[in-house]
Length: 309
Length: 309
Image (cartoon, rainbow over all chains, first blue to last red; front, side, top):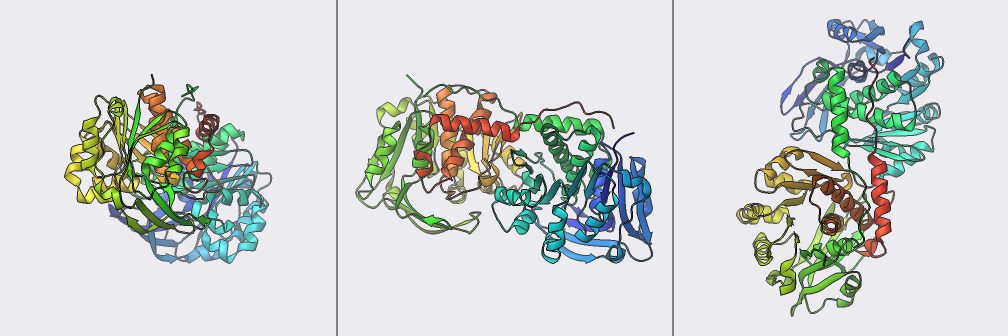
């Protein structure tokens, strides 16, 4: 029996415009990107909610790849919808519309079989709900958590309470800065470590990601891509690759966490190569491995003994 | 006899304000930062100009560290002055004043002994003058060149001519984008390779630097610093470390160019830890080596054979 990997997060319908095209009501949301990426490495259990209008067929494709949707509740009402437009160079985006729909009433309830999950990822939802999910999981080996600026400002106390109960906070650089009140990203990471988590993972978009613990900092760059079509979901795909690699190996050593960062970066890079979750749909384990080896080549150098000048 | 390393560039008096303090008329300029960093690894020959008001004592400190100032001309008139102010998070800066002074009349003339230089760095000056310097060096083994947006726009034809005669273009990401007209930095690097240089080095500030050739891309991140005082000169210190490492080893293999990138990043990181060239003044070769090893630790991971999920 493999160790259960559980994600709770949004299941959305995304309408995204980039300079290269646009989508309308395409499957998205943190739980969808996480599981589409993670399932390439390890089975994923999903907890989330959709409205009565959600195209469930789209999720069935995930099921075929090893995603267990037993925790996806369908409620009467509209699904969570998100609409955004990216700048010409994809470096920034504007949210045009957010309609929570049934997501506003979401109270995650885990199917009994999900309560044995050993690896838990609390996607970006209300920290109160994240705490509620954590309570329902019996004995997790590793709990990682994402959040966003909205919760940092509106539910700071609950978020700080949550931090005391998780192992890894996995956030964007801007979120780490907002949370800590420090613009230096390495000091911001230290701040996070002082507030509960043993490790901080800081996602830096096109510049990769950092893994920081009390003893060391590890940096994985982003994969060099000459074509990026849609950055949506890259961070969630990163999280999916990171957590699924850890679940698949069952190894929480520092060396393995570094490898997990590289698997995360690899999955994030596949995610941005097409619109929505399409970039992940055709990715096989062998592709991921090849990209991990390419990451090694990207950063590899040998330390020499420099001749005295 | 060691292989000569020559830099031509600006020798300035910088007045810089950051949130942590300010300097007035402190020694700076590309040739000064380059040689202050490079001389830690290898002797550096400097070609440049100063006005009658320049505090030559400041340059004597460089001389004591292995910098040959025989190519520094003193002309009647004012020295090149640059005044700038950084934003609170050091991510951007505003140039408040630029006074070229004698730099406007600068026509680099190499002392005969400098014409045997094997490693040549053409710092950011008018491409016409860069071409003139290149003509005066007899048989360089490696020529690298920097430029800036001003020359990209005002002297594009001469700059393109120069590109056909150099081995490495070493520029900021914004300059690579301006030059190529492509915002994707990897495509911008390819554009550079198609216009002459065999390699492009793209400096990315707090995100490190890229080395791109036709076969591979190498990424070195920036060193994680919890305190940065003054980013001025970091790119020139990077160039100094990069070129001086190559000159000191005499090895132009791809593996050694990667190491040179790391030495460059190490020197760049020392440069930003204090105001002006002060950050480099107390740095010994052993310090640089220790930081190079820290870079290895920063990016190191072992590729595994992932178990099938």
